[in-house]
Image 1 (tube, rainbow, N blue to C red):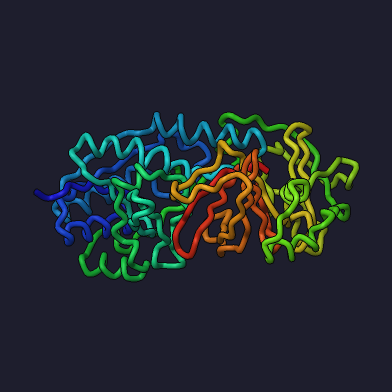
Image 2: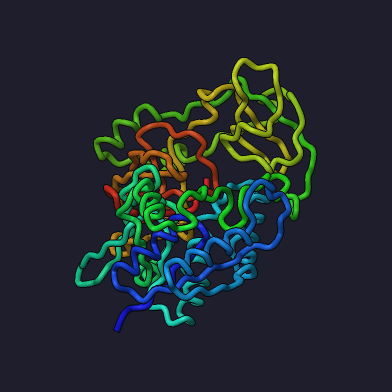
Length: 404
């Protein structure tokens, strides 16, 4: 008897080709479209709305001659993704709703709906791959990067579990985007030339301050420019050699290296006003709206309690760069549960803190309170709330929410 696979048909080319690939592989395939958002507040109107996505998904299902279903998951999406997003921004953190959407919706709530339809597996159009290994007598599933280095989406799945991976399929992970487009064109799929979606998962491209003002009030505060005063952490130069040679780094130094830059309003000069520190994130350039500088201004820190945004001039401003970060124990997630680090252990991994960032060499130190992640080179725009994901070669091993 054929295994039944429920494909998350989104109305895009990737999920469309994923469904076709599964049919070619001999699966019993059905499409399921999910609506996850109703509110259009802050939505940039040039984007296609969900009705268009639904129409294209139905057209693809008809073309491929597979059953088509619809489900509204807007309530769990609001509770588990959007409310979390509002809460994080309110605290002055920078969440990634796409990562949460995969963990909480696509491979959880959506998977439950797929099982109701008799699905043995859930499939998506993500550019990543699934592997399997036997570790210490235990069957382990692997999350591997997609073959298309420009489209690899494994980072967005950095919070999925072994249980979720067990029932997941990624049919286009071995393809590159031009191949996917060509398959769609050869099949004359209606999504063949449709643009990729952008913005927040299932919400679309939004004007973020307007979107956030649904729940977060605008509040005028000062923009303070920091010209100088970013202190170098004592011992940073020496720790480079220690990290590369494997010599133990003292806990006090790890804590220093992972500490964000902190400023006082007296550290610089007030150069303008903003509408709420919680609308800004470290590394942000747009929305500052202050001229008179040779180079663009960038956000280098925010203080949501005092409602101050600190900025620095130019991409080379030292306030934009840090050596390390810290992840609390309760925010550490291991996809490879068999490789979980023990207290006192240190390991080298490749790390990224945002989608499409080139992988960076780093060493992870497991301590009593969590993991200190120290990069070989200074990193730009580390912000609390982001997800750090660590890889060994092309396999995503684990991830965590950056605490500081």
